[in-house]
Image 1 (cartoon, helix red, strand yellow):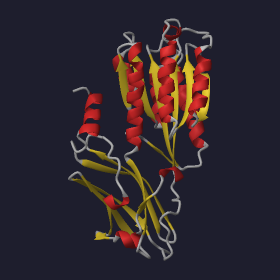
Image 2 (cartoon, rainbow, N blue to C red; image 1 turned 180 degrees about the horizontal axis):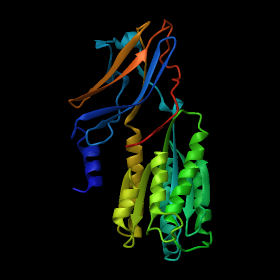
Image 3 (cartoon, rainbow, N blue to C red; image 1 turned 45 degrees about the vertical axis):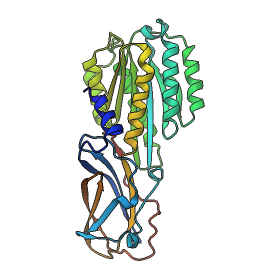
Image 4 (cartoon, rainbow, N blue to C red; image 1 turned 120 degrees about the vertical axis):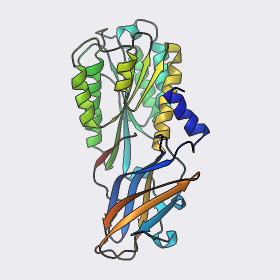
Length: 328
């Protein structure tokens, strides 16, 4: 069974097809006695486990179970600490603009943006053979703004029909990094979604240099490749978070939908759990355990309770260190 079909089968049809895996992303400890964790819950196959509630988790300090009533454990809205920026990068080389495929691409990109802008900040760029990106839409949560930008792009005259894919990826990473550095929220997702019908032809930036930039940036990368001129191996390597191949342009709407579904599903595996610790001093080990569909897993992290006291409100906004989060 192809990998992407296996993902959809397990996630939507058979959620318990693998064991569980909890992974801590960041933690916050602050007075009077607030402890908060941002972590993911997924199957052993890497599939998200959505829909868990505060009651789904058991908390232990030094192997002793804490009463959920005493700890007031709660799931907080992640928007208080987490933000997700997405760059949609569209191939505007001659093979797209001169083949009559542009209206199909604009429709598919518009539908993708309509779904993703509901919860994420999205920017759109195009690229051809030139050294610079073609700006389309700055980061926004407005679907209307994206649609307007795509409409303008569909009428834009392209100056260089070649394909500067490697260079466009590098410039898109720079745009993502700049935007993420301005975020108020400390926990930041950066995702690049690339559509292309070919490989790099301009040779402005080497493949090795592009991968060096991606490795240092630590962002999520999805690739949609269409047509017979693509190198499946190269694009699958570039799409380190996900790669979807469409045999022809008529299938790209489905391909964009598949990527949107993966992004939406992945976001549902993350939880921001907050509670009030009964500890009042010393260093302790916190264990978070979850059991669902007959599968169990846990994570552990130390915390220091020196100076802790009463009057804790678990809904208090956590104070996390700045960090980037990978979907996978």
